[in-house]
Amino acid sequence: MDDEADLDYFPARSGKDEPSVKSFQSLVGSLLWITRCTRPGICFAVHKATRQTQEPTTKDWKTAKRIVRYLKMSKDLKLHLNGVEPTSEDVQIESWSDADFAADKTDRISLSTMEAEFISASQAGRELLGTKELLNETKLCVREPMPMWIDNQAAIKQLESEKGASSTKHVNIRFKFICHHTQEGTVVPRFVKSQDMMADILTKALPAPRMEELRALFKLKATQDVVEEEC
Image 1 (cartoon, rainbow, N blue to C red):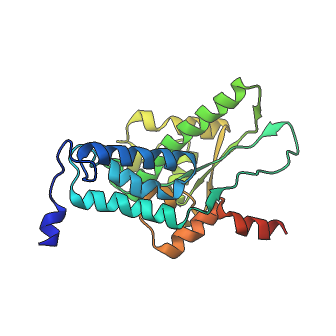
Image 2 (cartoon, rainbow, N blue to C red):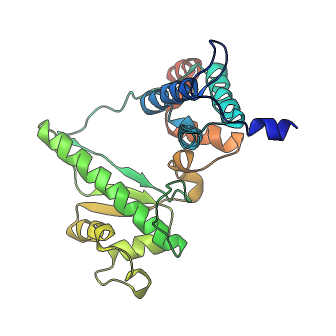
């Protein structure tokens, strides 16, 4: 009976203390703002919730409320972007590329893990180059090549290859522009072990211990922990 009740759809509007489509949309919108500004660790869970904004069910409402409870229990976590002292006038930027295992609901289908990572690297490269142009407009000089961390050796070899492999000849040409920038020396793909891939926290559901590891890599720490590190 509880499972059936969880699949009940919300009315467009309801009473003050009763959930509705409008209240669910408002809650998810607030979670999106928090995700983008200060708490990237809930990105994957919030992304899942955004898919149900048109026809949310009781189960979706419980999921969103669970995210809120997690935020309340971990409200002492904050992003600590203190950076490092500059050693030159150049700015170093880098990206982390990881396939999202169908989190992006489009008609784009990958036939292998390498292909999925290759497409993901192309999209990450687009963001990396866009950030570079933005910094250049503010009169900041970006150091080249810009590192792109990938946890798939086959995808890295494909990016570095001057000739396209038969395994990617069917891939849309718009995803292959990153190969040009790699060969030009603007972007350099580098291998990172899967356990050190920071982007995992943004692309998949993770157990609590792994979540805590990646939170630390993201500089998402409790203020007390940061004070102890500085002391």
